[in-house]
Amino acid sequence: MKVLVNAGPWLAVPPPGYGGIENVLATLVPALRERGVSVVLASVGASTLEVDELLCAYDDGQFTELQKPYNQVMGIAHAHLARVVDELRRRDDIDLVHDHVEVVGPAVLSALGGPPVLHTLHWDLRKHPAFYGAFPSSIAVSGVSESQLARAPDALRAAALGAVHLATPLAERDVRVEREDYLVVMGRVCGLKGQHVAARICQKLGLPLVLAGPVSGRDTPAELDVVAQNPYHPLHNHPDVRYHLDQVSPYLDGDLVRWIGSVGGQARDHLYASARAALFPIQWDEPGGTAVVEALALGVPPVGLRRGCLPEIIDHGRTGFLADTEEELAELVLRVDELDPEECRREARRRFSPSVMAERYLELYEEVARGTGTR
Ligand code: UDP
Image (cartoon, rainbow, N blue to C red; front, side, top):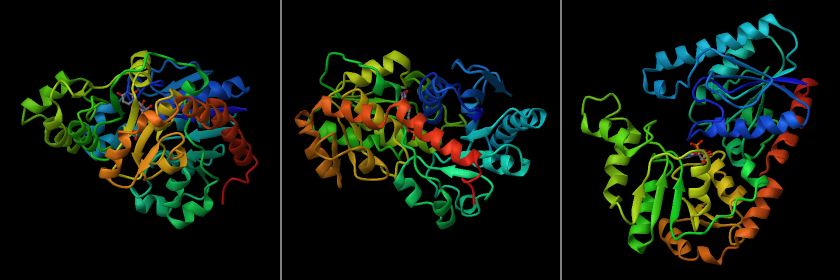
C-alpha cells in the first residue's frame, strides 16, 4: 500500500522542539513503513524523517507565519495543498491519503475526487463549528480520543470510524535516568494548558516546577523578551504572550518556578524523564494529549484535571491522578510518590506504542480503501 501522509507546511517532521501533529507523524510513519506501507510525506523541505518520498511547497516550516492575518495563513496552507493536488493529479500509484491538515485539507481533497482520504481530527472540534457541522461526506474521519469525538457535531460523530489514541516511540524504549525533585509541565504555554495553575500550586506548596514549551512560537526567554519589551511588536498583544507575561511570569522567581522555553530531542526526553511527576492543569478539553502519553512512557506519573481525553489515558490511582478542582489537584500533587513508575511504563507499552497506533490505522486504511469508511 502507498499512502500519502499530509502533514502540512507548519513544522518539519520530526519537529525541532514543540510540535503536536508533527510528533504524532514522526511516531506513526516509521511504524507504518515497518509494516510494508510506502509513505509519501507532504511536509516541508526541512523534514528529516525517513520516508519513501518527500513532497513540499516550502523549504522550512511556516509556523511563525501563523501569526499573520488569516488570509495569509490560508494562502500558505493552500500553496502547500496545491503541491499535493498537483502530485495526486499527475500519478495514480497513491492508494490512500492520510490527511492531518485542519479545514483546508478536507476542503481541497474532497473537491479533487482523487484517491480515498482518511482525515484525522486533531483539534477541539468546536473551533470551526460551521466547517465540522458540514464536513464533506466523501472524506473518512477518525479522532484522537473518544471524548473529542463525543463533542463533535452529530453528523461527524456518527460518521467517524473511531478514535486512535496518540502514541510515542518512548513507549518502546527504556529511558531510565536519575529522578530529580522537580515537577514539570510540558506543552505550549497558553491559557488552555493552564501553566499558571501549576505555578500557583507549586509556589504555595514550595515544590520546584519547570515549565517547558514555547510561547506563541518564541522558543527562549530571550526571544520572548524581544516581544515583551517592544509594544509595537506584532506579537506583543498575542493572547499567549499576554498569558505568559500577565499570568505566568508573576510566579517565575528564577528558583522554585522556572520557565525554560522549549526543549527538543534528547534534552526534552531527559528533562521529562527526570521529573517526579508531570502536571496537566488543563483549562480545556484536551483532544489527544501526546505529552500525557509521553509522561506515562517515561514512568513519570501524570497528574491533571479530569477533562478532555485525560480520563481515557490516566487510570486514577494506578497510572496517575485526576482532580476535579485546583484544591484537589494540589492535594494529589503531594501524593505523587505513591504512584508506581513501572505501572505507568507498562500501560504506555500496552496502549500507546507506535505498533498499537500503526496497527489501528492500518485497519482504518483498509476500511477506507475498500470504500466502507465513508458515508
Ligand atoms: N513538546 C516539546 N518541547 C516542548 C514542549 C512540548 O517537544 O518544549 C512536545 C511534547 O513533548 C508533545 C508535543 O510537543 O510531544 C505537544 O503535544 P500535545 O498533544 O501534548 O499538545 P498540543 O498539540 O495541544 O500542543
